[in-house]
Length: 545
Image 1 (cartoon, rainbow, N blue to C red):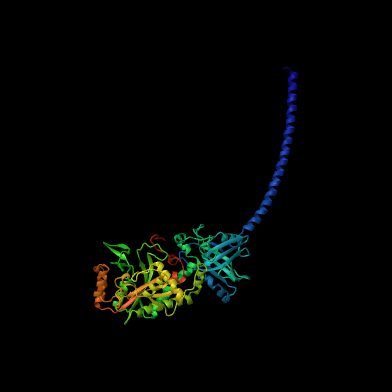
Image 2: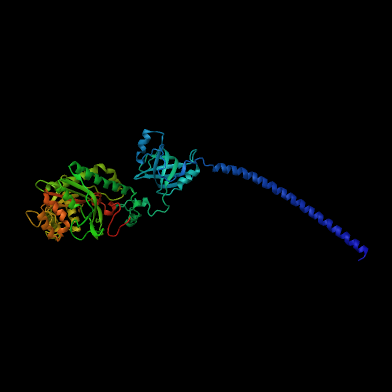
């Protein structure tokens, strides 16, 4: 290549380089402007974000902190002397006595409903309920309201609140004229979120005349499988308070009449009543039985000069009866007393005891009876004073008049019992009556025969709404006669030797009876199943919970 050619190439290269440099400079300038604008935008955005962040932080500030939340596990590590709790049922009285003062209440979350900046809770304490309002204000934060609405139903909480009168009644609560405006709320014990039954469903009316009562029902097995929840319903709370009332009245009435409470063995060496309906238990290297009755020991106490005794305790019957009125374990209310000349002295005492119990329930437990009536069909229980007493033969005659065929010495079947109860109610207008002079063949070995007719016995049953709730009799207090009757019933004398021996030291004439406590409550209230009046029932198919 010549000199001229080299010169031209160099010139072209310089010109191309200058052009590229100008383009690069322009590009760099544009990028610089763009970067500057981007930085300016970022700065503005950061400034805006900073201001917004400050506002969010201000909004997120929880000014109720420390006034709500889950309490630490109560292990009796301290006592809150400043917390004096008031019962829900006493809130009205508290408000009258201490106006404008705050109140502490502990209860269960029955229901809850959140709406915007408010949360409504129904707080339940046994059968009492009150509405609680947790609303955003200068004391209650949004976070506190949110926490309140997140608490699972049936959880236990502590509330500190003001008692506020309401302008219109709160029909869904027992406390209808006030509500609690809460400003502190603490979770004491949390219930799991999914419950096997809802208290509202388990509390719904089950009445024959209510077309809506059968829409949502919790069946009996579900109730009994989850008995702890089921027992929280107002009706169940009332039933078992009535049951406690029956036991209290029984004790009080007999104590006023000179009776002594005793406690008898439940593990015994021989069947109390004879027969095979006993539970056998292993007893070291031997076998024993669960007591069918405290009968023998009541009589031994009479022989020991206690004169009038009673006992309240468990009774066991190994009967494979899956009926509405049978349990394999129930509470027996038993009594025994001496008499001077005639067992009707005892019969009158027992009849009058029932009359006093019925009056006590009517007069002292009206609130509980109403609570049961709100869920179940409950007809007022009717009784006469003094109680109606019929002889067994009269009862049989009444049944025969309506076409029932039965022998003179035949025991009453369950259907005939109920029919006779209806006949007695129609004729005498009473739900309670006594049937005296039962056939000897259907009574236990220790029952005294009727001295005027060997077919009959000095024994009696008592009935409520046509169902037996007591069986009793004059007992044989002569040891030789007792042995004779025991042999007649094919009872092994060696196994009741200590019982018979008690009468060889001299024993006064005596009589008594055994009462099924759960049946009394069931029939007084007119309920359809004894499992409703047994807290944790035992029957041939149920051994838990």
